[in-house]
Amino acid sequence: RILREFQAADGEGLKVGDQILVQQVFQSQDRVDIYGTSKGRGFAGLVKRHHFGGGAATHGSMFHRAPGSIGASADPSRVYPGTRLPGQMGNSRVTVRNARVVKVDADRNLLFIKGGVPGARNSYVRIVKAM
Image (cartoon, rainbow, N blue to C red):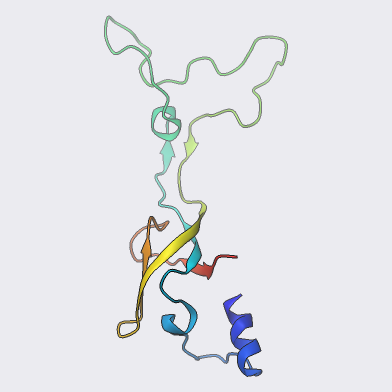
């Protein structure tokens, strides 16, 4: 969307090596959408991934952080799709919508955004004006 705005403005569009500065695109109080990849947390169990409570911790209980029963008996004879189970947590595309631009620092080419930004430090994100 940003590239189309620049192409429409001057007619010739952007060339390889052209520099886009934040003050050319964003102003203070703009609303933006931020696309990024969330932090990967590896293979996670039910307690960490889905915030399950777990079982009793005392009196010889052998049921602490395990999933327990996951399906019904003979009627469905299967586990329904979408059942919350252990698995890969994080490392997926995340979109933060309508984040507010607090300030644009033209001298250092910085964009100050209120709220969370997906991903680890020094990771790439895509920031687009919200529609």
